[in-house]
Length: 378
Image (cartoon, rainbow, N blue to C red):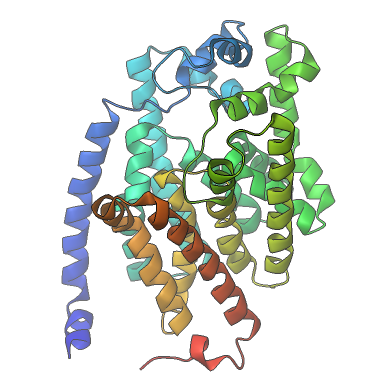
């Protein structure tokens, strides 16, 4: 009865949600106008002044401006040139506008690709622009939306341009890595080589413009990232560092990083056995949340799986996906603060992400006879 009531009045509820979403977006933008501390403006300014910011920050042990530590790949600082000719306040505003466009562009591209109904598309757009990970990205001026857009491209469009542009996602090592690793796991070596072109072009421009040693400069972004020691509590890399590697040498830490890459590689091989490209992408984008450090804004990577689940939301497994992702998008941070017990809560969150991948893979593999996961609920 309640279900029929919502169905009959779905347009009314959608209009209410639109109004709420508008106020939420205005509030988020107002915060972004005075924050934006993660936008990598100052490291890019240093680069275009001919200064090797990696070397400078490694020697100083930190960045010069806000939380802009410059631990991104060379090409990001190259393509941010238009923002470097502006003062900080104006550059922050322009990046906020660009990020807001990304926040709308991503769900529009996904919904159009899946041929979702107008109603479901609008609902998903509203969810994406109001969920906490997106709001946090806009508030902090993060690069997560930018990276996510280019992570999706090779799955959305099978073209050389899409594969080339996917290389721009490599600017963020903790998440973009999964795309080049997936090219290798899928034995797609040709497109892998195409995808690394932007990375190498950025590196060439960077060491040439700053008169840096090419070989040393190639590894400086990774060295800066490791020196920063960025860890959280809800991924394998962080948990291993917290409980096992805190006093170990750099060599041993690099060995464990290689092991994590190897495990992720095996998972990607399993994922690539599925023929549904969008389904594969949905699970591939979850991998960075499991294996390497991330903050709350990186949970936007769950959005493709949410859209895929909306496509066939009558199946139980997809209902589980929807409820879980909505929880992560809106309630995870609140519950975490209420419990305030990260030593248990965060590992449980990691476990839940692993379970999501396992259940979806098992369900898809046995979709013709695994009734528990694929039965249509009346």
